[in-house]
Length: 257
Image 1 (cartoon, helix red, strand yellow):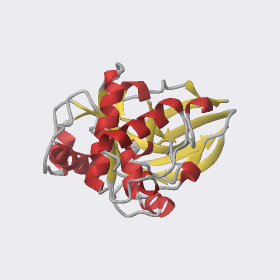
Image 2 (spheres, helix red, strand yellow):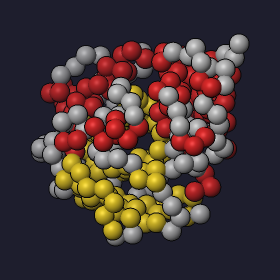
Image 3 (cartoon, helix red, strand yellow):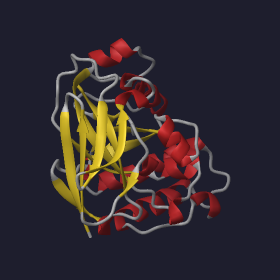
Image 4 (cartoon, helix red, strand yellow):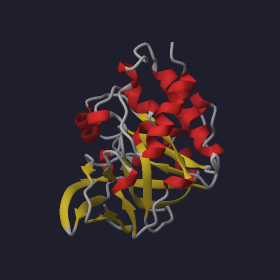
């Protein structure tokens, strides 16, 4: 029987080498549970840390109706962010480093206090140092972009990279900020931060709860990506990707072959 450690190596190698793999649930992992999947994720990230990376936060996933519909699932999920996933605002990525890269617009929190456990939105806000417009680059390593919930969780919830824009104090209403995701100046997705659970702070509340379940506190200085506010858009070479969010500005990157 294939072990958790074996599957952790499989998904880590797939992410590191940008090679597609068969679904774990179709390749000896048909009895894997969601708890097993998070342990696979944890061990795969430990391998990345052993190579010199370090944790910088958490990403939330499936926090909008658009994403739930697009991916055909119903549960929220989360993944771990590491420093090697950071893309510079205005920088570029190469498709050679990804399998099925897509991008989605988000808002991101920078924490000034640790967070863990069952908290209220007000307690969550009190722990926020700043907020910024952001985009997450997701990249399922599974063949044909097909996977079960167990598969996607094991694969770090498809999280591959993220870019953050200008930071702002959180002393304003960011519950319903309009946003536009542009490819080469042409709108591809239009939405609002309200699509993230009705208010992005609810995503941070959920993140603290998941952190308690994993016994991994969200730490001061970490970032928490609140989840996609629209459906994700596939990335192609030669694209300048820009997301503009009402009140707090723009964030961008370019895509090369």
